[in-house]
Image 1 (cartoon, rainbow, N blue to C red):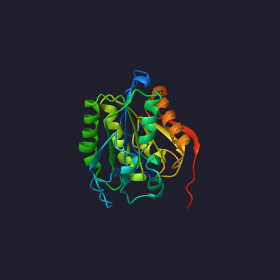
Image 2: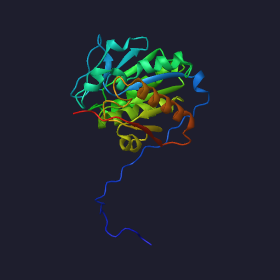
Image 3: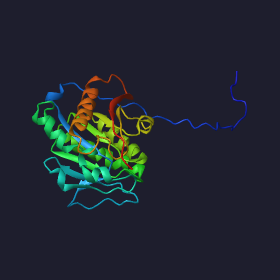
Image 4: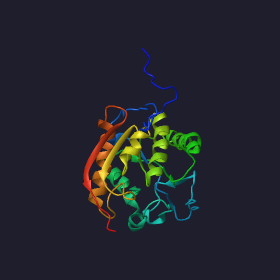
Length: 241
C-alpha cells in the first residue's frame, strides 16, 4: 500500500532533524574530575581582540587563572548588562575555583574557552572550532566540560561545540536559557534554570544561585542516563528592564 497521496507534496509543518546521538558517560567521581568551561556568550580577556559583533567563528583561550575582573563580553545578540555587572553570570570562573577549593571537583582545567556564537559560520563551528577546542581539552585530560550559550544562535553554536567535545570522550552539559534550541541541535545533556539569556549561570553577584546552578549541572553530568536528557533547575531570576 502506498502512503503517498500526491507526489512532491510537502507538509507545511516544520519537523526539525535532530543530529545523531553522541554520548560519553562520566566514569569517575566529580571530586576526581578535571572540569573545563566554554561559552558561546562572547567572553574574552580584555587584552584579547574583541569578537566581530556581526558574526564571528573564532574562539579565545582563557587561562583559568585569569582574574574575573580581567574578562569582558563582546556580543551584539543579547543584553550584556548582567555580564558587565558580573562575568560569572555567563562564565562562572570564580565559582569553579571555589568548587575546586571545596573539593567538590578535582581541578579546574588550565584552559577555558570563549567564542561568539551569534551569526557565526555553522560549517566552521562543526569542522574547525568544535574539533579544535575538543582536541585541546583532550590533551589537558579534561573529564567534564560545562557550556553556556547567549542568544538563540549562540545556543546552536554552543551545542555544536558541545557535541564535538562529547565525541572526544569528555562528558558535557549545556546550561541553557533556551533549552528547546539546545535539544533540537542534539545536546547530550541540558540543564535549564529559569533565567534570561545573558545570565545562564545565574543572577549577577548572586553567589549562592550561581554555585547551586553549577553544582546541580555537574551532578546532572553524573546522573543523566541517556542522550538528550534535560533537567529543569529550581532557580529563577528575572532581569529588570
